[in-house]
Image (cartoon, rainbow, N blue to C red; front, side, top):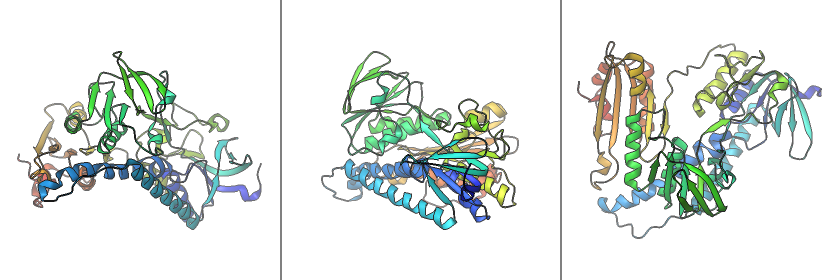
Length: 455
């Protein structure tokens, strides 16, 4: 079905974090690899996720830094944010990174096949190119790494709203934005937009933010967001959107008509299965995802899947490790499986949340109320001592009583993600509360509170 040059040891569908990691690692082990991508190289993380979002977080944080400057003796004068300039700069950086990743593939000896891929059968992937031509690739093995896409809720006028992908394409920002959702994407963009001078109203279907995270931590994030001036509406959502782009009316579940310049529908993400024609390859789908075993294998022995399309832990480092583990096992002679049990995560809200291990709720459910002891430190960081403003930090340890082992390490506050990244090493090694206590504090820091919490 294809020329000899179109036969590969591995065909990867998707040039996101997992697909790129797998392709480059497999090629380093001597495999002949092709990567199929109909969009830009880099995937969600590089193009429309982690990287551009974090740059916007940095940009929006200057509002707070400039506001606090006077308390440290700086006369800044009048300041004004130009969101359009920031957005353009972020897009330029994304362009640069896209080019870098294309270069990385070339240097690794991986062939990039531009176009959308679909299965013809279990070994053949047809690629539809932008010019209308088609190419058929034969893969001894095929790795599906097509990622995920934002979910748009089924409400009247939903097409008038933005999803998270759209936010990075904006040329400017309106005066007021309504956000639907209470997850990490919704909270992060609420803080970004507020920091860039936008009036933000966030509508949350449930009674708290960040479902799935430790509830005490999510409450501290909520306090910080509300104190900053973000308007949170719980037990409410939007039922319809009408009007024209830039001049919208959003109808809420309690019947209010809310005028705004934009609506962000941050209501979750789903695996990007559309167009893959998985049935042609015999690949099973369950609950709108591709189920795999510990070796990333689907029900078809030579077809594998990694990353968000498997809908397990949808984080870039997880997809990268899954891709590398797959390649090392199949092409490098070093079989290994990814451990999904202890994965650190962060929410780049303002204040920032980061966590590793079991939440309080998870620990209590697993070990019972008598089997868990909690340690907390709540305070205003030294960085806020002179301004006397800003959210207070929360540091929290969840400890198993019987063994003293730290089951969870959690934080809300400045540099939380950087701190928890290092704490994750200790938690992964089975550190106990006594191990934390024996560690000499580095003073004055926020993170020293993790090793000075009294018994």
